[in-house]
Amino acid sequence: MAPLPEGSPPRVSMACNVRMRWLPTPLMQSALVGDSAAVESLVDQGLGLDEVDPVLGLGPLHLAAEAGHLAAVEALILRGASLDAVSREGWCPLGLAAERGHLSVVQYLLEQRPGVGLLPLTSQASDAPKSDRMPDSEMPMAAVQQIGRSGLIGSLEAAAQCGHLQIVCLLAGLVGVPASLGQLLAGSGGLPLSLATANGHTAVVSYLLTRRVALPAKPYSRPLLHEAASHGHAQTLKLLLELRAEPDERATHAVTAVHLAATKGHAAAVQVLSANGCDLNAIDDGGM
Image (cartoon, rainbow, N blue to C red; front, side):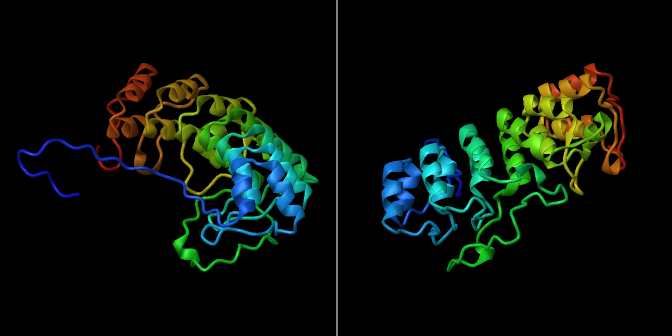
């Protein structure tokens, strides 16, 4: 942005992160607004359930699930829409519903998955079946950022990141495995717990820690106390310290939680750590 000329009036700059949705067909338009009668009529007339938009590869079921329109979701499923269709960004309908917090839609989609509790825990974060085929599109894959989450584990990650506690409870009971509190506090509880901590969703963090729910940890996992301190979430820090997280635990380069909080300017987080006995004079490997 060019600097203001001297004497010019002040101006306000705004940036928006907008999700765009392409709706090239009447069926997709009806699914997005939740017009279940129109959805039923259009599908019964022979319009393809597998149609997707040409840019992001979202189909009618993706749109209805993301918007939380249960009746439209039911109409599409009953007429054969695929539960596991994956968009070009990596979203499945369940992942979109979980991310947006639509509990009734999540419950319904789970009820339609036979043997849902038998999902292998060795699967990756986005664990849609290998038979799923990415939709055809004229846009090259490199042009579409892979931000989506799919499958049970990916949907749990989406719900945890957004703080949807009821959905986290529902999904964690299907895919979580037992772990010790020490393992979880050390960052070995998997991405859902790390995401909830990084985003300050204290209720979700408390649930996962209390239930000792874990998933396979990612290589870049770090102690939860460091995650909360780095993002300045004082209430989450209090919870972790009440659960006996080590205030001076060191991670890569001998960094402690107070290093991270102070570097990011999170005064409230520094106060919480200080009140719980952290070493304010701790030195990392860089001499800081």
